[in-house]
Image 1 (cartoon, rainbow over the protein chains, first blue to last red):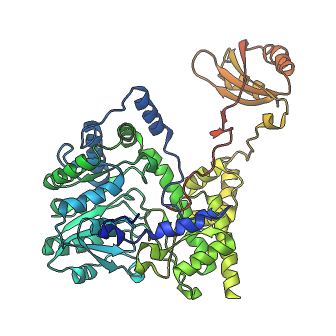
Image 2: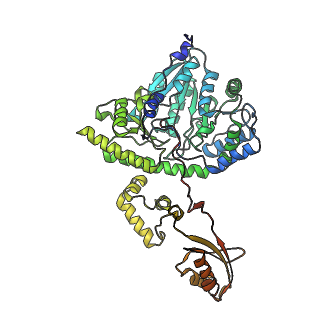
Length: 387
Length: 159
């Protein structure tokens, strides 16, 4: 039978990560540096709280916006960590991961033909979500010489009278780049002048290795035009719990809640109870994981230095983004060959946008022993290339 | 770097110094110097291996012994503690608050050996008032490490 499907969906390219995943999945004994999730288990006290919620029979729907207690704790947390002030009941929405919040934000803001500016390389979902919301994605190719930060001039050049939203995703997946306060202030000037919105995906906010993360919502005049997205996956190693949140002006959150209500109903209840525990008592877990990530980050950067592989110093998330241009291969060729010859999986930078060409995303959400073996394999791979 | 280095080797004393240097962004010489300094200051008191002897069927019996003692004038508990901890059979000895004074952890090849240590040596010490011996039946976790093998990486290979 022929299926008459949505043209819009049919025209969306499958995720570049997915494509590489299928290749890797066929092989045995692969050393992977390809994951985008923490290697730590969810801290026990958080899991235990989830178990307790099950035991107590807390298995019903919560309110559409999420448990009140959780929303209050989210606001306390954002205030404590990032000096942000949000109202728990009207400006906070609990979602199924940060991903849902991205989708909701786009759908709540976009009218057909609006343009969404997406700086690439970036996480794979912004572009398809923008298309599904009937927007036109406008890509900015971020530059290695700027350490993959967004420059105000680049933003200015991309803005038209149709521009509605700028997507900011820092600390960044896949580059590990961050935006510091001074960078954000420059961007904010343009955003305010041009009267556009910012959807700020700050899922990696806790994982910065050069001072504390600054949210663009904290910059003067930005809170009213920013939808802040965050979640529990990266900071608390809770990817499978599927829990995130969005904070923003109540007029926008209200409309996002409407879509969420009809599409999702509410985020998983047990996860919400566990998340309350995470926010209340999880600060030291974050510190412990962050210290380990930072050690691995330095380990990889020093290993690249030894091998003479150029890599800018990424100060966020758990990725490094080395440049492999000098080996005369595309990212995909390099990643394929590395997989075939050494059985190590890395993700080609192009999976995250054309501007990722010439780069690899290497995740350090792995034990140091795993990374050590992988770096030895990389060393022998490169040695063979030079011959 | 001192504390971070200690936290790193606390859980893995075999981690090599080259690796440590890369993880802490210093030279290997820095690491070696710091380690020998920490050793000479007796901050690092030793390097040990956590072994689950049961897995290779070697008989070992571990007992926790609660010891009540009379502290000695001018020396408190230290003097009597020294008399106890100098026995090589004693694996650990701690001064404890609460219902008794000194907790002794003993490891021997058999129950009989432990019994004879307690009755012949420990109980006969002058300041020891009483002892209570508890045998360990099963070790679940030791030195912060769960002894059962933990499951492997269950994550998808690429995500």
